[in-house]
Image 1 (cartoon, rainbow, N blue to C red):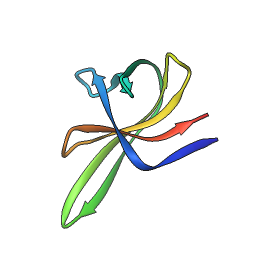
Image 2: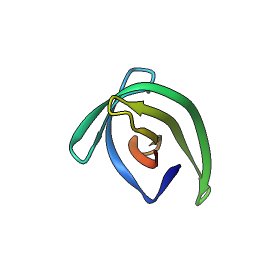
Image 3: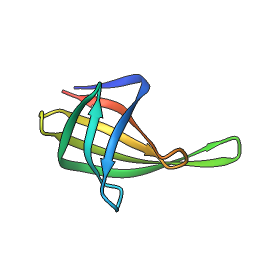
Image 4: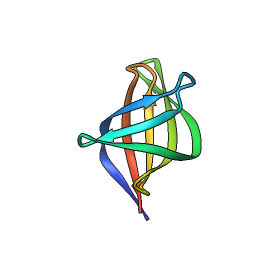
Length: 84
C-alpha cells in the first residue's frame, strides 16, 4: 500500500552528475539510495510555462520505498509518496 502525501514534502537529495539520486535526507536523517525501481518524467503546463518533473521510485538502506521528484525549474527535490 502507498501513502500519497497531501502536500509534497521538500527533501535534501544528493545526486550524481546524471541526476540520479544517491542519498535522501528527510527530517534531518540521511538515507542511502540502494535501488531505483523506476524513473519517469512528467510535463505540466502552468500559466503558459512548461514545468518538468523527474520522478524516481527508490528504495533506501532503511528498506523504505519513496516516490521522489526533482522540479527542474527550481532544482528542488520533493517526496510525493511513501510505499509500505
